[in-house]
Structure formats: structure tokens, C-alpha cells
Length: 94
Image (cartoon, rainbow, N blue to C red; front, side):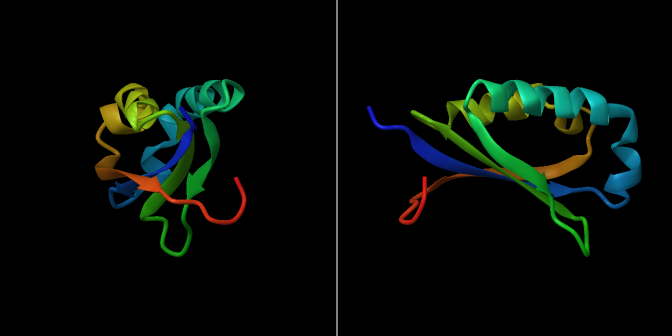
């Protein structure tokens, strides 16, 4: 089965940049783990305003992105108001 791409978008709480500081090291370690395993291709927070984050995953289904969400301290600690996982039909690149 060919691997697919998935976009994970986070809607973050007001003051997210400051509130994430105690959990940032753990969050980045999780991201590095998924990146080194080839599942997370890239990710980061949007700027001006910093109210969302976007992460791009590669896998057989959306389960890999769901696993990330379930382990992410930002989600567990309430820094993410909501999230969405969508399959992405990549036509250039990948």
C-alpha cells in the first residue's frame, strides 16, 4: 500500500507561545522521534498571529497523526483548543 500524506492542524489557545514553554522540550522530543522514524516530514507554528500549528505526516493512514496527537503534551495540557487531521492529495513533490 502506498503511503499517503496527512495534515495535522492545531488551533492553539491565547498566549500559546508563553504557555508552551514548560512542555516544549517534551513536545520537540516527540516531534524528533516521529521525524526520525520517517512519519513526520515537517511541522511548526504559524506566525502573526501564532494561533495555529501545522504538521505534515506520511503513513498508510491517519493513525500515525492520531498517535502523535494522543502523545503530545501540548494537547494533554490544554494548549490546543482543537485539531484536525486531513488527508492531503499531493500533486507536486513528495
